[in-house]
Image (cartoon, rainbow, N blue to C red; front, top):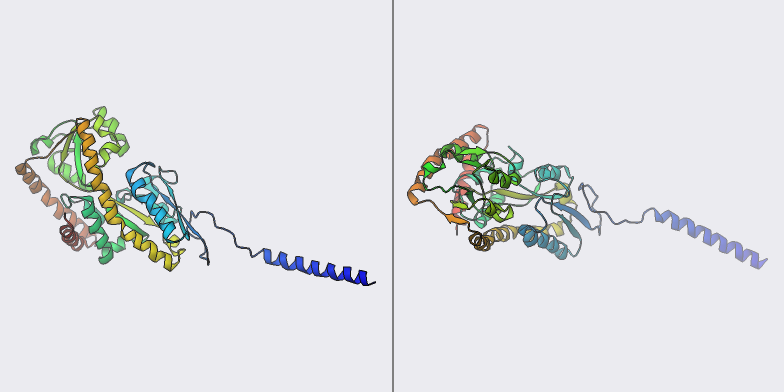
Length: 359
């Protein structure tokens, strides 16, 4: 009888134990998969995983020199609480679809050009005005301060968290024909990146041609265009030195770029880790500006080896260009002001900061 009671007692204990364990099993925490929509609920001890997309190929200098180290630094300084998965080569989204993908949360972070989203960044387009800057570092530091101090400029990026906003090194015109005077511009067929540069072409007598940058190499080779405007860093990137050898350096404009972060994704990160990441982001303008500018010195050696002829216009010809282009500045500012955009205020502040950071 005692053995029977002992057996029944053990059975009841085991049975109740199973019920208790089964009931608690439904509350077991799970490890989140990498986020693609930025809506996971913040939880204590959660590892926040973010996807960062760019169209540049994996070995692009900015990827290897800045963005991959950035992702590693974030993970290390947050002690693994925030992990950023870097996806180059348009594997997640195309370059011209990146900004909308960040806003909707399709991706958490993305690198793109403001010019891919026509009309959304009118104040940023002021950075493209002729002869505003002389280096990438200058414009990157200018924009970094503008983002911290100017409410109108901040509002332009109000739909996202701006991780970094800046620009490439200054532009050039690479072509198959040499220009010695302002008159020599007339009739040249040059690929241009946007509206501002189209107006510049009209003022100089150039025929502006719009096409994707990826098509320019073949277009020059086939004689469809005589050359292209673009940042100096793009020459080797797109192998333009193989099809054109005349490089006119005259710092006409810079090409704005930025990396944005989905707001909901940012909110998943704890305030403590947000502070850590913000400190890392604060170092990006100088780091990226130096990356673009220092790269040019190495590139120029390769240009020389490939017979690329670098030249500048005489001072008197440059003065003629400034005279021709000056009215355009007033035209662009007036058009924005008529739309209720505080362009003059921002333009004046950009010029002040550009002078402050001029090297």
